[in-house]
Image 1 (cartoon, rainbow, N blue to C red):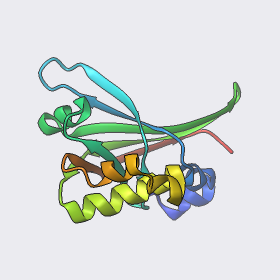
Image 2 (cartoon, rainbow, N blue to C red; image 1 turned 30 degrees about the vertical axis):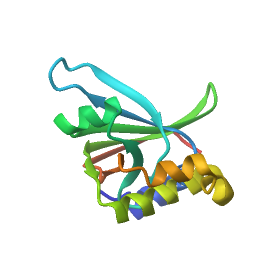
Image 3 (tube, rainbow, N blue to C red; image 1 turned 120 degrees about the horizontal axis):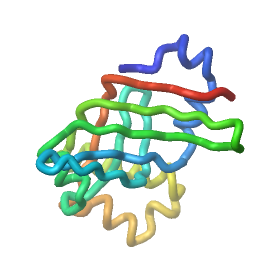
Amino acid sequence: MKLTTVEMSVRPWVGALLAQPVLARLATANPINLQPHVVPVWFEWDGEAIWISSFDTTRKMRDLARNPRVSIVIDAVDDAEHNRGVVFEGKAEVISDPAVVVARATSIYIRYLGEAGARKPEPASWIVDPENRVIRLAPERINVWGEE
């Protein structure tokens, strides 16, 4: 689901918020005991999907392997009277193709660390780590709240 031009024109802050390198929170759930798991993540929105870099060994990836349904929230609180945000929901896809993983992970890391920061040895090694994956959520539902 794409944010429509009507939604973006009525709430231009949505595009501005999604363009900022702020933290998102990814929620997964264990399908056996139904325990939710929420973690802060770096993300990139391409206009149709949210992309997140992660490693196979994390709990979120174990949850996704058994239950691909997720929610992602990105929000901003300016003060007690002004808060806004976007919630994306749907079935996530885990991508392991190294060409896609390296390109997306590099883009996400540059978004948060800058070009020079993403090229440092520690983040650069994460990008090409054989356990690195990218999570792609093309949302089935998008909920927006708040005002500029």
